[in-house]
Length: 169
Image (cartoon, helix red, strand yellow):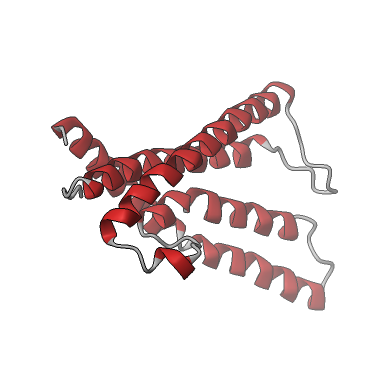
């Protein structure tokens, strides 16, 4: 594989690794928000923002962590047949299936950009009583989709190299 591809794979792997390490702690933010909400329900009037803010934290958690999950093979896969294949066959099949993922993520990112530009242009807010601006969470979602797309492209390069008997890391 060319050096430019090797550098790309290293850069994206490193970026998603560190982003994933930071984002994994957002689960504690979400737990803290929900714990605060539960405590407030017992002692006072519950705040309007807690449920929606916990949902936003969860969206950021799984969208921005998508690249890390793809990099570490932490996603769901049907292993009934796949587990019996040789590493080369797995790499060949993965290099084909990741093309579908790249196509899907490209469409998702296009829609995300469209939705984010709408939210920024018109000041879109949620339809809840709290009514927060939607642009920040949509921007975070686009960042997460972009990181996952970049990781999927890196994964394609890794699978092609693996099918050729090389290793990219």
